[in-house]
Every structure is written in structure tokens, then in C-alpha cells.
Length: 122
Image 1 (cartoon, rainbow, N blue to C red):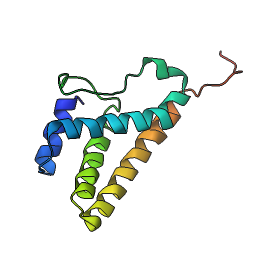
Image 2: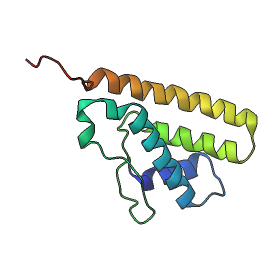
Image 3: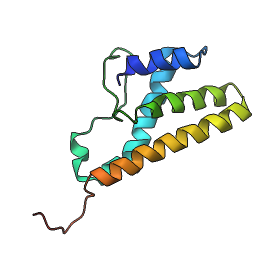
């Protein structure tokens, strides 16, 4: 999913008044969080690109692959609800985001070797 794809999907799913630069900042924040909290602890992390993203490069591919890329839409929906002061909607949105985020993290941990000092390669 590219930055433009994410912006288009969030605009279609949850119309809002925030500009694209704000949404791009949220996407950067999420990729930074996922990278620093999970991805960087794996041996393959050197090959994975993550933000910060800028508005002039909308064709940049985001870090989380399909079928887990819906995490971006759920995160942006939660941010919209939070900044609009819609507490009940935010609570629902953040639960959906958390479930999607955990699915990605679980998959990533299952499919990528963690960094460690001593290991046996066969």
C-alpha cells in the first residue's frame, strides 16, 4: 500500500477535515512505532524502509505488507476519532486497530528471525 492509497482509503471510509500532511504524519508515526517496537529486533530489518514520510512522495510504499496493511486505515480512523473528541468511537476504533496491529506483529515474529549473538545456521 502506498501513502496515496492509504489517504484515498481513509478518505473513503471515514471522511474527515484533516489535511493530507496530517494523515501522512500519522502514517509516519505508525511505521516508526512498529519499526522501533518490533521490526528492528529482527535480522531482516536492514532491508525494511520506514518513514518519516513526506507529502511530495505519495507513491512511497508503506512498511506493512498486504494483507495486514489495513492497520493504516484503522490507525488513522482512531486518530480522527481521538482528535475529534469522539471518545466512544475512539475506543471502538482503537480496539480494531490493536487487533490488526497484533495480527501483523504476530505474523512478522513468526516469519522473521530475531537478532541474536549466537545462533546456528544450517
